[in-house]
Length: 199
Image 1 (tube, rainbow, N blue to C red):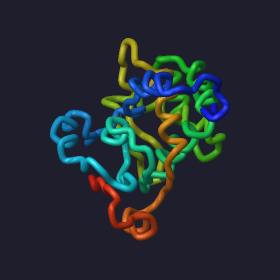
Image 2 (cartoon, rainbow, N blue to C red):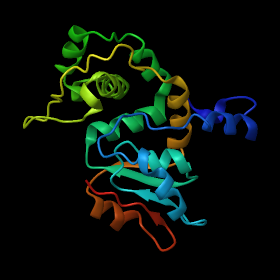
Image 3 (cartoon, one colour):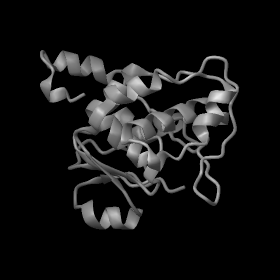
Image 4 (cartoon, one colour):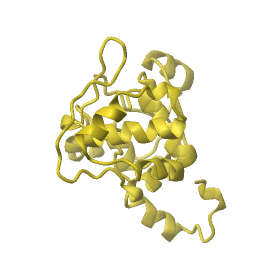
């Protein structure tokens, strides 16, 4: 879905869409609970927003910057954000086939995201995150996701409103995978707001 082709894209439509902006992933160490402390520290004016340890992006989705750079060293997570920006409808389509069962979870967990299309891999990332134990992201030495099934009664596997809002926001920014030092070296300039939240 690209928002440039949608009719009646006025300010009220955009405001309504962005009311649903929230993190797409549950993230250990996420800053959702600390937003009331972080928001007062955000400068009133800045050139662009830069967050090189993005993870779940709680602050980004709260302040909804007009321009910026988000990055992480985790290629699977960065793939998810890029795919949401580029083809959110396809991700929703893939998410709709998933079931919240232990068998379905372990079958999907056994697949290698690098052998999937970007949209399939993104849907897998969201599905596993919302159905695994505590929403953790952990991999073994081979780089394979290894968090066990979470046994939730009714997890929200598809959050269309949040996905559409994220797609709108993410289309306007640079999304990259890399070390934070390289990201800052390439993109940070005087007047930018850099949110550094290292693990």
